[in-house]
Length: 318
View 1 (cartoon, one colour):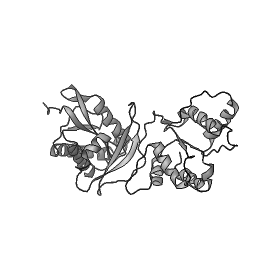
View 2 (cartoon, helix red, strand yellow; view 1 turned 30 degrees about the vertical axis):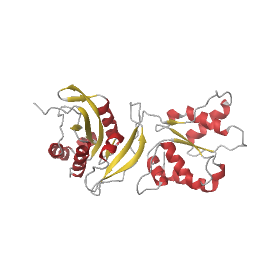
View 3 (cartoon, one colour; view 1 turned 180 degrees about the vertical axis):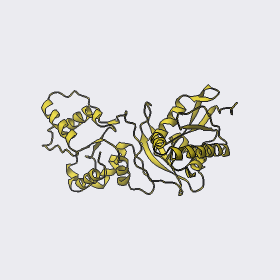
View 4 (cartoon, one colour; view 1 turned 90 degrees about the vertical axis):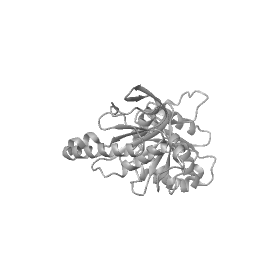
């Protein structure tokens, strides 16, 4: 009989192997050997940090570990990520909450679901923490470790998004592409319209065609012509065309063009990141996303704003 699973408020660590199916097909011998070393490394790390592993839980090459202390879960994740297990690279998600047991060997419920969705956002070699876990461990991190705030992220099939942090350490890879956005989520961040939009079907169809065929579309016209309303209406109808959603930014309140990345970051739900400018954080976030961004009321910022938009287009092919 295995160890009794922890109950009450528990920190769950969920992990899997990036590209496991591909690795088994392309490097079967290496994977067979690496899995043996991984099983040993997991058993040693979980035990060393006071955790419990429900050995029957998990699918494929994924696994779950439970800890009474969030700091122990983070220390375990760090030990696993520092282990040399080529060609294996682990994706890890950690979340703290009340747990439910399906039986003596399996967890069920919102806490394990949220941990799994965090793991799904990660790249190989990356460990992601929920806001709850981050707040608990911020003063108990392993030696030389630190956290980077990656902003608020939607989670597949869950109604509430999550503020995500990444565990960093000098001996780990700390630079990754943007998080793996769940493809079935549309982050529609458009102003709510209090009146219906009547007519202008021809203009809407033309603008929609231009947006789907070009990476940059500019609406020009006299003030009061209805450019903003037209852009918002078209954007709302094109949400399904952009897997990572639509983002609206109103630039009218600012006079300093250097504030543009800050407003865009706020609209995207990004937070300041240590050692990285806001502009860099925005570019990093958007680099691997397919997203429609509506920049409204930017005519007074054209000189510098054009350069900022050009940087977006060059860095973010989607």
